[in-house]
Image 1: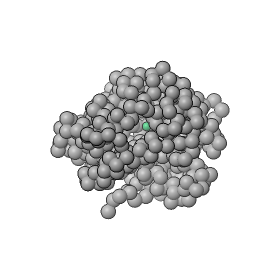
Image 2: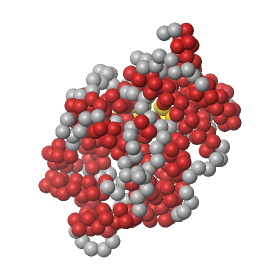
Image 3: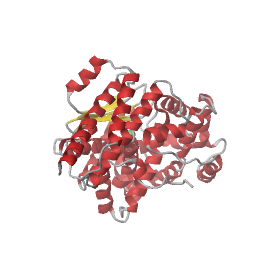
Image 4: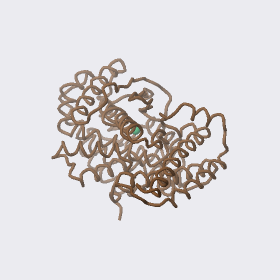
Length: 422
Ligand SMILES: [Zn+2]
């Protein structure tokens, strides 16, 4: 490297460090903001001690963004270029979040683009009605569809005393499959805790040193399909693996310190949630999943294994309703409907039971446009990996592309066109 390149690299590293300090500073104003922090403990203490105002943090973020924009593009390889663009977008996302905390109002789409670098496509009620009509043909009974679905699904609730055994078996299987394709550190592990009174159903709190704390919310009945979903999504190859690969490959191996902090309201969340959701089918392609559920999880859960295939056929249809949740959030946050109507919409078009719909509205209140990260993220990640040859027919390639995505600083807008957009 020539001296200009050395100077540019030094400036980039210093702006990366400033970013960590600013995120920690914003975390002092927004308790949901810092999802994980694995950097020096003194930095966090210093953020707590400094108590910088939002205006100060916003000004510092704007200054750093300007310096980053002016940085000469010297000698960066592909991955370093991704890093640069990721840091730039992360700074802009941070400034938007600071603006929101200061009272600035954005529309749902403006917010998701500013924070997560993506906009969810709009689908009208007609699209969802088509899926609901197909479900109506399959679900027994008559009366409102939501009641028929609730009644059908009630046969697949796991008794609370059995949940831990089923989840443990699901986690073991996810870990084993993931280890078959991704080299994980020997010391990695996590513990599971059961909690109540949360707006989410599961949460991974990454602790650093390849350890996670996974919390499972037991407020509502737990259906059997949630077990493998949670084990993959929160654990392997989802959040736990994503966070530890970032720690190992980006923070430790490359010294890219900006990845030592994970701001929840940032573009990383679309990659995190999208890959965690897509990781379920990477670890357990449809037929393998049904076979595993039938032979292992259904018996452990005390459920009738003969009903496995039918249950998952129904679940597959219900999954097509996932974008309806974004629609409820968009209308609600844009002020077109109130909380009651948002819950009604989730009941009608997402087939959520009333308590689950109300829990989801609390989630939307707390996390806002974050909701797009799950389903849009899943589609974007799938499209990206499949476009690179990582299809269901090429599982080895799919795992390889998946793990490379997890340990690279790729932005949502670099994943490809938005599915379903014009
Ligand atoms: Zn998640």
